[in-house]
Amino acid sequence: MTTTQDTTQRNKLVTFVLCGIGLLVLPLIVQQFGNAWVRIIDIALLYTMLALGLNIVVGYAGLLDLGYVAFFAVGAYMFALLASPHLTDNFPAVAAMFPGGLHLSVWAVIPLGLGLAAIAGVLLGIPVLKLRGDYLAIVTLGFGEIIRIFMNNLDYPINLTNGPKGINGIDPVTIFGFNLGKPHTFFGFEVAPVSMYFYLFLVLVIFTYIICHRLEDSRIGRAWMAIREDQIAAQAMGLNVRNLKLLAFGMGASFGGVSGAMFAAFQGFVSPESFGLMESVMIVAMVVLGGIGYLPGVILGALLLAALPEVLRYIAGPLQTMTDGRLDAAILRQLFIALAMIVIMLLRPRGLWPAPEHGKVKPDPADRITPLSAQQNPPGIDFPADAEPGNTELRQDAINP
Image (cartoon, rainbow, N blue to C red; front, side, top):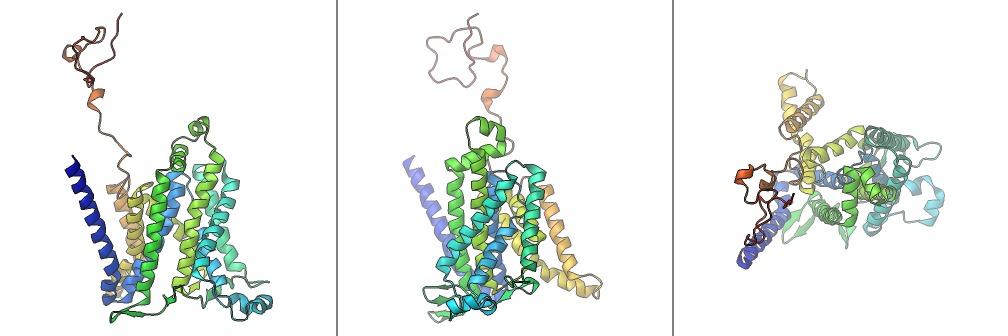
């Protein structure tokens, strides 16, 4: 037995090492085919963080949140304001306090983005504590649209977000003197900026996964799942449903804030167009199509749906050319995405990679109805004194009429 366990652990270790090496060399190989492909992977990793955060709210606590992109926007605009010349150009008091410009370090950006988005999540959760299902989805959807409209109109009379024109000139991330917005050469091999960001996003995704996995097996995670299955029963068992729901909203939103801050640094520009309704729908679809409540499935769904629209550009473009421009490439791309989602849900209704403990369970042989003549100890007869201890597979409780 010990040898088998050692072999299994050794195989797992080898698998992890090989996967780690593969992830380390992946951007270096892909960038040989063009930085655009590495950029697609970077965006997919950001959406993976978003999907993992939303999975806390939707998958663990069972709260349907259609306004999750609002926390993404909060983190993005927070970093855009604190790491760009926008505030110093529009507010003389800020320019006097920071003559060299306001350029926040990444070590302050991540905690600030996490905390600010968590506060926004709790503020959203307070008025919707009594709502469930469709009503909760409608309210959260409205919250997401309110945030986008605010960002689109907060340019007058005080220019805070620059309105629909967005904020540009955002600083890239700098870690230990390495500016991730510039190419670097290691051992004679040039690493593009998109590849540098890949490693940063990969580390953040790994940390997010570890936190979500630990939450799933914790008392808080079990309490969330109890609320998801039956809120009334959870309350009857003494769970503080109000605080647990607020905690789910806050913790889920925090990952969205960090992802938004990284998105702003990666793009160097943010505008309200990046945080529309379709983004919220796509994030929810990533969780549902991948396998709601199951972390590997959520990651698979996020990577697939984040990369699929970009990959389909290379299919829709030639089709538009073949039809002499009569078919719009953008419409074709959305059509292909919708068809792919429909096919997935028809073939895999529980998701591409659902949780193994969900769904139908193989019946236990002890639950089968066995004729009295075939039972070892029919009901109404005491167990014999020489019965084999522990042999209760088909045995029923003794009954002495």
